[in-house]
Image (spheres, rainbow, N blue to C red):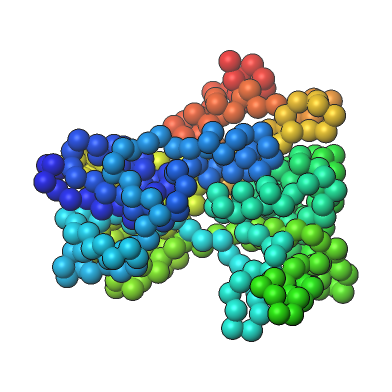
Length: 412
């Protein structure tokens, strides 16, 4: 690319800023960041909420004058190759990159919204943005009653962060176990026990039906305030705070309105091009080979590949082998409880499963092998081996000594 080439990136998150940093000096790059904050790493929001990090610790590296904060793209004119913004600006592009991320899923709960309204009651929070994190942080205090709806990675992270701040936390999970997409039953049970040790009350196979609220005071600007969560079995949980951790959905509205191909996400090819070859998509909003990753590792890898593509390199994106990792602080100061999962953790018929468990050291390791190759696994507890296991998996290698690989010495 030349310095005359105009690249506009919609989205100032991890993917958009990584791409801008890689393109510095090679093109005229403008990044539109909808949020007014300094760009930040969403992966660290739970640590900010727990009080372990200050918000500025989550900041992403600056990209200089390329970033325009607090500006939202509202329309793409593909014929004129122009992006129209909510501040009235119209930015011409030669290449447009959509890094619009994802939105939290708001479940269809009775009492969540008033008729024709879109305002959440006071005390009800999504957990996706820095604003969400700061609002929750301001509201939480020792003894406050908090209900987290959703027992996936986001819900587990929010529950342990609130517990670390002294809240009385209840986690309501509709599925039969926590993090059911990533963990097998035994690993999920260990995670369940560790959250309970932090003081989190957990309800699985628990469907939330609605919220109860106190009405706004008449002739005031006060909003309704949440008072409880109603379960489908008729049971009611008192609540001062409710956190909606029900998953995320790719932000595809701009792409759809512009006539680009959208399925679950914005469809891209191996060069991360959309159905318009001048427009690319990366990160949580992109769908490649039928998959939307929604993971930081995939966003960074896609940004790096696209930087190469735009620089004229003969490179292609073939998918990401992403490892999910979570650290929980255990009760009583006995050290962290680490969790890592990767690949296919549910075996197919004919697969081999190797499992190591040590109750004394509170470790659990299981891997799935197919045709003598690692295809997935779960590691909990002390994770000195995770680097070696991940390298074997990512390299699609046959493990030479599986016992050695899965014991503590295997990580050294």
